[in-house]
Length: 149
View 1: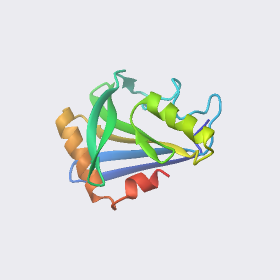
View 2 (view 1 turned 60 degrees about the vertical axis):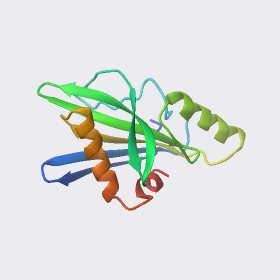
View 3 (view 1 turned 135 degrees about the vertical axis):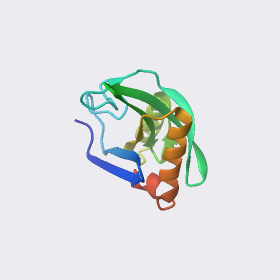
View 4 (view 1 turned 30 degrees about the vertical axis):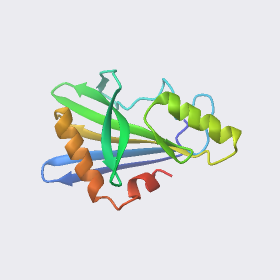
């Protein structure tokens, strides 16, 4: 497995919950890569609806391009927002993550990387974005992006 360290936290405000997952990769190798078809945001019992669509969250007061995917299981659905932090840069596309990994390798810079995911239960997209942004807003400034390092 390529993940060298993982963080999974659940945040609650009233009935609302947001799950935060950070998977850190200190090195990458065949079968243990940050960006790989074998990686999945769906856990046991969840069906990944497959499409990875772009949207924007607000992190540290700045818009951040992210992607989201829907997950379902009988009687339940989730929206998962995710992005990568590679070579000190936040990117949402697999291709740009690979570009940043290549740059890090070529210029022998920081090779640590991470996938950051925020998941909310059963909401319309605009409500899920608002809920994710509300969580991000209460985290220490710089905390979410610094935590991924």
